[in-house]
Image (cartoon, rainbow, N blue to C red; front, side, top):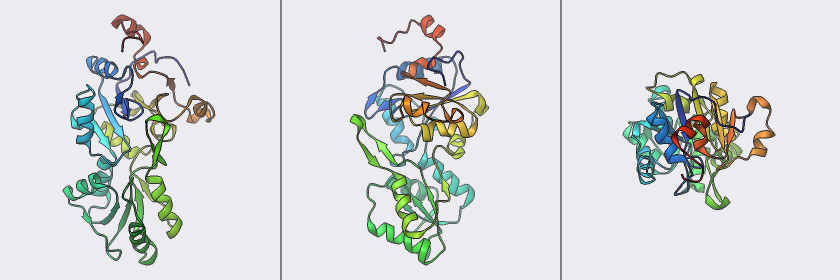
Length: 282
């Protein structure tokens, strides 16, 4: 685990967004010029998020507003990966999404059948859902425990979604835990980081080896965990959730390759000097 800039450029860069590129509605220092610099060098850039409450178009609009125009093909989140996984593995399944509207909309557009009838449900999808209520828990319970026909998957394993100022909001893991607690079932699949499903969505269409890619994020469990699972180099940015102390406490095999305070330090120092970059002018 190094606290210095990488000495070389990688073939492609995959970025978590919230806590890495921006925090809330504010662009993090150095993020804009880092993305522009990588693109100018011909290095593909992709953006990932475990947040299923937004569809990719909303991320396009947000990045555009922050001064980082990005085509929708360069963005993947758990709305995208959940739909892709269902179409590839269970195209005829009837699903019950405990989710907000972006996932439901994407499922409908993909032709995936949805139902709230426990007798008809094959798969319960637990997601980040700020409209979660006891009625939804009862449907999941009946489909899994009583009728014994459905199994449980989740869009993402995050315990909470971090907010600026140190606050947060319960995320999908809390809904998974509620369903597992009452049914005795175990969640069978996760569509988000750290699973390879998310990496596949990120590098789809790129002729790159994961070993030559760099995963950059602010969470050890998800961002860095995905890189380790898939053989990628990784960088923990100390601008979001996880801390240096938490990284240092891990087994060396589970530690990020790099730890940086600023995202633009992903560019080797020699190149930053050549470009005239300093930390005070970004």
